[in-house]
Structure formats: C-alpha cells, structure tokens
Image (cartoon, rainbow, N blue to C red; front, side, top):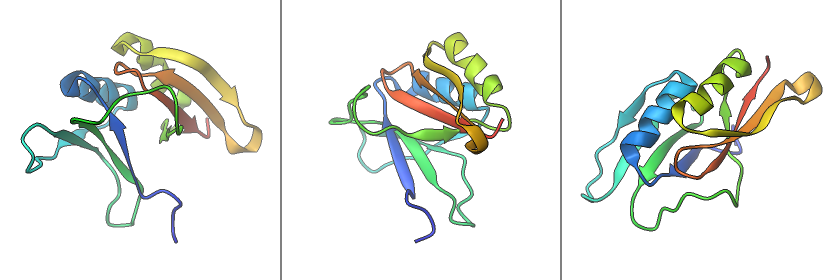
Length: 125
C-alpha cells in the first residue's frame, strides 16, 4: 500500500460555488467530470495520477450532505499555508482553527467551506 488514502469526495450543495471556492483557495484547477447520472455534478482536483498521487473531488448528488462532523480531510496547503488560508474568508468560508504549528511536521489549519464542511489544510511552511 503506497498511501493510506487514495481518493476522497467532498459533498457540496452548490457545485459551482464550491468549485470556485476550492479553485481559488487552493490556487488549482478543478475539472468537471461528466457522470452518466444526470443529476450528479463531479469536479476533480488536480493530482498526480501517473505517480499514484492521492486525488479527490467535489460532488453534488442526492445523498451527499456536507457536514462539520465525521472525518477530517487534510488538503495540501501549498508551499505557504498562510497564503491559502488568507483566501478562505474572501471566498465565503470561515477559519475555525488558525495556522497552528505541529513542530517538525509543519503547520495545520481548519476552515468551514461555503457548503458547511469542516476541512483542514497542511503545509510545511
């Protein structure tokens, strides 16, 4: 097993709003991925598939409900966590744990996204 996690999905209520939020906060592209089921909207975060990098997506579909409860997903906060974190509130999210040192393992922070999910960021700086 290369990674304990190989894929994740973040449930959203408003696909376009969430896509803009995550693309802006993380400074990345989210690619629409058409699904055969017409009512499902699916957007994939950029990831290194060729090297078996961990990937994930946002999903708007019946039965997908955003929540503050449950598992905590840590997204890559980039080279400087402060930069990604500075975009959260401008994009409609709310910081719930500021940039916090975890010693030699870098820094973490948590926020509520525009959909009501609790998500975390990690960075070495």
